[in-house]
Image (cartoon, rainbow, N blue to C red; front, top):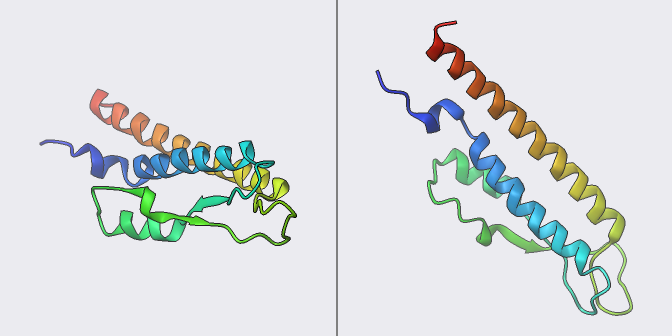
Length: 117
């Protein structure tokens, strides 16, 4: 009996990929918070989940990037709002850690099953 690792680990490997790319985008937003005319970007979680649920093997997240609309305009045309970006970065980090913990538990369970415990 063979184990299909993708099915055994669930969606968490793809969620890690999503959170990793989102971390890069949010970090880029934070780094450019003072750059004139820089437009804040983010990834759409719901569209990514739809692709994962549709068993899309090519998880191309570059198509899911959108420009965030600011709550308050800045004089230099920059749409990065530092507090919002920091909150989204922290939330994304927490979600990444959660997916990583679920993945660790799945791997630990598979290891126990293989060892016969």
